[in-house]
Length: 460
Image (tube, rainbow, N blue to C red; front, top):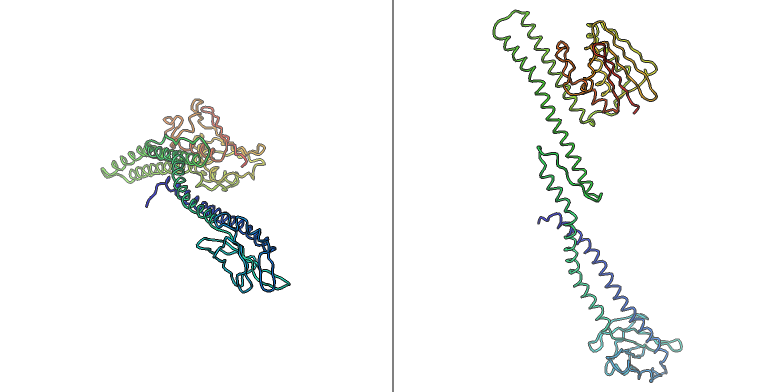
């Protein structure tokens, strides 16, 4: 049988409460029962000891010496506060008894433990009795037996038993109905969450779950769902952006590549023409490969948990590796690299992100420098921070374009510099890398005079 969440909560609460109630009700029943019997036993003990002092023992007989005591009402009538008394010898032979016993006798129990109480009957009336030995001259001569009616006590115990048995299911049913009602009110916000999430689709990710007023588990659930929706929205937007960027940036080179190959196969050409077209096609493929790698890098940087956090390296070593990587380009332009390391030689930075930052900045400095120009690279310490400055004497950037440098696919004066390869993604990667490690970047430039880029690596 399948039960809804509200019913299950109410049922579990009822079962737990039912177990507790059963224990409590049993405890109440046994406490009341023991109390009733204890009070009755005290009265029996009192009567037995009191009347044992009024017993006269002779050689041949045992009898009550105070007959006036037995004339009291409780010893004459069975119906009113009955106290039954009986005297027997050691073998159980009857010697004397109270008038209310009339033609009946109390049961003598052989080998009865002194002070032990027993439930018996007297003419079908339940009674409780106690049997005490009678001693004279150090020898046991007989017994005095005191008994009282159990009817009233059993009525109390029986009424209590049936009251608890009837009350138990009634209380459980009431608890189930109340807990079901309260559970329904408690999970009402969950229904709101379900309705809201059902309205959310791939094309409708702006709606959010309404936060609960109290900061309880439902509040945390709503908060977690909203955070999940936010991450999902960002992921889908990144996917759309990646698809849009990739299709936009690869459509033109693919068309160019297709056109080049179609022209190449229309007729026979010389060896030189084949080599030129193939080399041109390879350059287009390299461009597309670079673009895809950079797009993937940007997408990967949206999920920094996949990148090692403890990936540190020496900043000076990182710069040496990057300069070695672009040695051929530096030599082709006959550029001069001026390094100034000072006392920051042993400074460490995040290897992955710092490499992305410096690789793109240094590559740009090389690409946009004029032949036989100078590139200045310095590393200095400022208190706990490390400042890395890269300055070139290249073509520079107009002042009004500085704010757009970090936008995806933006290239300053792209039409004027068609001979310089690039897709405008490098500085976007730099910006995200800087943000990922809590660094800072500042770019200053004078048009046709050069650009200075300063990266501040914070102590982390």
